[in-house]
Image (cartoon, rainbow, N blue to C red; front, side, top):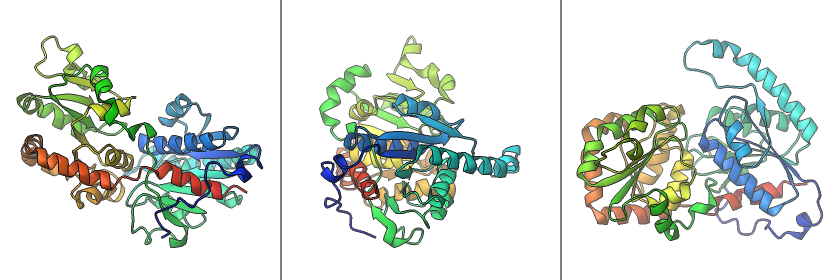
Amino acid sequence: MKGKNLNSSVSVSSPSLREGRDGIKFIVSGGGTGGHIYPAIAIANELKSRFPDAEFLFVGAQDKMEMQKVPQAGYAIKGLWIAGLQRKLTLQNLLFPIKLINSLWKSRAIIKSFKPDVVIGTGGFASGPLLQMANSLNIPTVIQEQNSFPGITNKLLSKKANRICVAYENLERFFPKDKMILTGNPVRQDLIDIDSKREEAIKYFNLDASKKTLLVLGGSLGSRRVNQLIEKELPLFDLLNVQIIWQCGKFYFDQYNKYNTNANQQPTTNIQVFAFIDRMDLVYAAADFVISRAGASSVSELSIVGKPVIFIPSPNVAEDHQTKNAKSIVDRNGALMLKESELDEKFNTVFSDLVANENLQKQLSINIKKLAKIHATRDIVDEIVKLIK
């Protein structure tokens, strides 16, 4: 694998690219969950800052959340009729070959029409057919692999990709070594200096500055098991005098909104319940502790944020990669981890000990920050710039 330090890469002020090229075009594909969408948007934003006159087109799955989130970020998007395989025999699985062929042909038409200089994939259902067609048309492609255990699509695409930007070490058994570069995952740049936003965050969420605040993140779509845990442990949080900001996910909001302080006339604990949180910089600034799933983007963001965290990995993902993501931090004493099977037995003790132990809080914060790659977006874009002809 190439070295971690990319400071020698093409810089933002490169005159040959700034002044010698007009009409640079990028296609970006990433979706299905926030973990694929927000890295894609972060990469596009960095590219746009370097090439203000460049054209951008996103490609996603036509019924997934990227169809809303990408236009909200200011970019055009086209949708493919594509979805993943289910674990059991369903009509969706029977339609998969038809959807795949349709998506390959539509991807080809999009690429031929838009004529991109580079195609970038950050994962999600649409990335597969799009990058496959880009490779077949000899368009330079970049894969951004967020997880410590890659999915089968990126493994297949990696054979013809020009660059593979990874977030974890020791992925040589999955990808060609000469194409890989360790960059980390793209994150929102407004997370880098959250300490200065603490006072603003307390006011924004109407919190009590004298109390500790727990932030609960179940992923962009929400987590049933994490939500069940928080509901069950509300008496514990009340006993510990901890206020809560709880992102439960859009699928669960109607079920848990009843615990929101605004909906409860006589709350014993300040509880803010959200389907989705837009101001992640402020919510991280407000938090003293975090309970989170261990998706790759969440792990990367929490490393930069540096708050004490308890990871609860989802066991329902390919190759149990969330557990591997979390262990990469836990093994370096940067976080705590509880498996779903351990929650009923261990959560009460683990969380209570964390709240009571300031030395442990400081140790976790220091160690997880050591693992942060705050220049990941810049370094990934440096690699993309090298491929512009």
